[in-house]
Amino acid sequence: MLVAIKGATVAADRSVPGLIVKIGDYPLHHGGVGAIRSLGRLGVPMYAVTEDRWTPAAASRYLRRAFVWPTTGTERAEELVEGLLRIGRRIGRPTVLLPTDEEAAVLIAEHGEQLAGTFLFPPVERELPRRLASKQGLHELCAEHGVPSPEAAFPGSYAEIEEFAARARFPVVAKNREAFERRRRPAVHGTTRIAGPRELLRLARGWGEAPGVILQEYLPREEAEDWIVHAYFDAESTPLAMFTGVKVRSWPPHAGMTACAYVVDNPELADMTAQFIKQIGFCGIVDLDWRFDRRDGRCKLLDFNPRMGAQFRLFESETGIDVVRAQHLDLTGRKVPEGEQLAGRRFVVENIDLPALAAYRRSGYTTPHAPPRANGTELAWAARDDIKPFFTMLARFVRPGARHLWQLWRARRAAAATGEGEQATGR
Image (cartoon, rainbow, N blue to C red; front, side):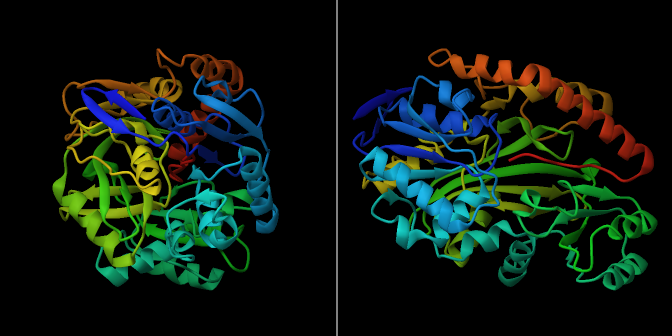
């Protein structure tokens, strides 16, 4: 099917559906809605795994069917694979898989032989997504290939934490070492800034005999900028779509998921990303978080998400390509049109950007590389041609969501008062 988008023509194979795959309970996920719209507007039949029938994704006019399948992330892999295969049989034809979380991306990579034929997905090396999603695995890969990243330690016992506390320069940041720990019993919730050795030792007493944490160098926000890279790489690790931008606001402030971001060209960062991907041999969609450290003038890799990011619709090329469209075109044997990214575009997540804006104005923090005004705005939820997901989001968000935002804000204020720092959640 040929679909004209902003003066460009995108040729999509609408005989091959797409399936949004998620593991866990996070119904208010705008990335899934964005993917449904992105391919649905090209005439691609779209399906999605949803927690229930009243999620924003299930309300999209571009969704052919929602498969209600509540999961927690604690299920056995065999159970999850069989559930996916059941959905595949009900769709009845080969379908492109679009994972929205690390668990789903790792599951698909590690069980590719069982899923092949029923589904289409990039032929990534079996163990690579799990290693990239792990903080320790990513740090080791960065060190191996000379990619800048924050200094980090991986203590294996309380005694090693005591040794670290005696020599470390504070503040430091504590994160869960493995990506999936939040499903079980995480040592820390999100990203926790720790002001000094006393606080570290007090927290570490609750981490057990084998603390599953990474203790990382703190990059002060006053001396740093958050950059994001979204891209799609083919089976030869060649970038068919590459985009760069800056995160202007997040929620919780300075440490959470993107609330507002702008497209900003950064060829050096794009080249660094492409080289790293080529070295490790990854293929598929990536969502990378980099932090530019003004103190030494280097971009340091913080996170590598081996799947689409929730804010991927920030980025689109002059030929109408985003990373989700690039993957579908490539896996169905279609050419991905080349084109520069649309500079100056802005992405806003309506339900979290308002409190984030208020918090950032109070702090006085700004992002120097953000353009003074947007050249077009992409909203996460509201769309003229697909408005139901926006109202469904509001219905689910307003009461419990407002309470959750207030609780996060109070926790952040309390943490700041005690010097224990910033926490981050989200995708």
